[in-house]
Image (cartoon, rainbow, N blue to C red):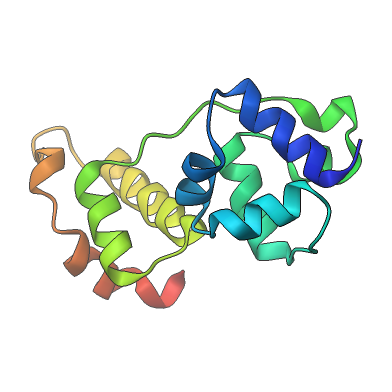
Amino acid sequence: MSLGERIRARRIELGWTQEELARRAGISTGFLSDLENSKRGINADTLLDIARVLGVSLDYLMTGTDEGAQVRQEVEIPRPLADFAAAEGLSFRKTLTLLDLRRQIVAHRSATKKEEPDQFDWAKFYRRVGEFL
């Protein structure tokens, strides 16, 4: 099975259309179609974005080995972050990293200071940590 066939198989397993996967991975539907049909190559950053969105490892997408086929838990990106990322043109990888940074900071805060998820200022946070992404 080729790289494109593994991407297509996982996409179908998730019940997603090409449009859905393309949107989640930040690529065009035409590019995804060409990729699934082995008409195009792909760079490592974009492949990593696709692997994360599909919840599989790069190893699995590249080789099809079972060791890398462990499906990871799906990540839900909060709507305010998704809207901010879309407006800023952030890649899926950067958006996921931003979310992970936020979660790590919250985990280290005391339980006395809690913010509502919808009230968080993602633009301000990105300005402060953007250089680390």
